[in-house]
Length: 326
Image 1 (cartoon, rainbow, N blue to C red):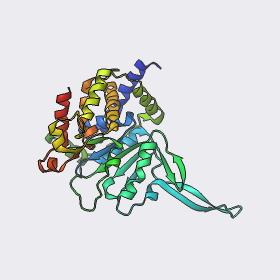
Image 2: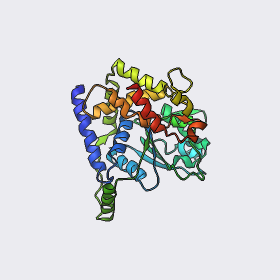
Image 3: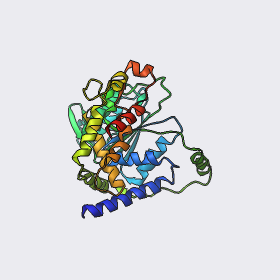
Image 4: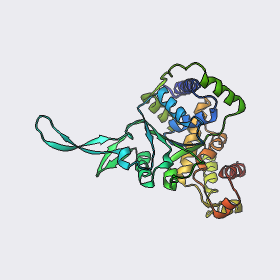
């Protein structure tokens, strides 16, 4: 199939996913678009929002729509790394009575993982996700096991309740392609939610996309060309976030301790490729990059003491840098 026909099929499939999600989720168009971009860019997403904004419902609904193996992991303070990755279990052969250790895979061996309230578990357990998210494999007792493809982690986090939580380390945050902030719904959306969720129960969601087709679309994304001028602007944007770089200005140096690394530039371009395909185009524009700078950069910028004291918001800083670069 030609790339032109694949693009048409990609746009139709994305539309089908949106329509099915609308049966369970009211509004949240921006959040859904960023989730789809993360999926087709082979990236992981961190969803941040207060309780009651349908973060878990959104992920579980997406799992029903996609023909993928889904696992939900509820992160708690007593969760152990082996509870995620799996471990060797002593098994006995009923015929020979011989005993041997066999690997029992954990819930990480699925295509779509919901890491619910990921910041409620200690760093040792959080680190169990690092290798899986970056290398799509896990190592248990010296043996390495590949994870299924596609592999997609969606983690949720509550930004206001910090008692009994463990902030994600920067190395873990950098593994997330996007940090997707979920805001309160508008008045009309909240009215629709009340009517939608207190009326007759809705029917089951339909499966609209297989794992094999997702992989085809992910390969298509890699073939989308990016003009050198757009690459240059994305590079300048990322480099201007680094306070110790000659590319940064006084505002950045005062507000930030650390900026984004090269992985942020990769995320910008991959996300921009998916966004342009969702719009039915095969050429990335600066607008595609700028539209995704917030979710790509907001969790990769570390405020300095002065920045925190001045109440600097990373989203505001990113918007200023976009205007300077654009």
